[in-house]
Figure 1 (cartoon, helix red, strand yellow):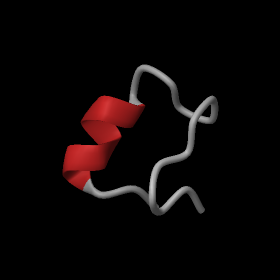
Figure 2: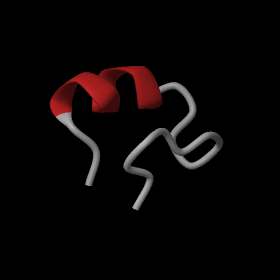
Figure 3: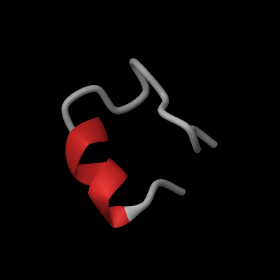
Figure 4: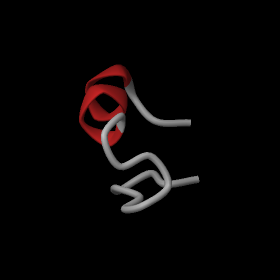
Length: 23
């Protein structure tokens, strides 16, 4: 799962743009 910091940023584009740890 995403990290806390990543979750906040990824919250906008959840499965739209998976960051470093997408899965």
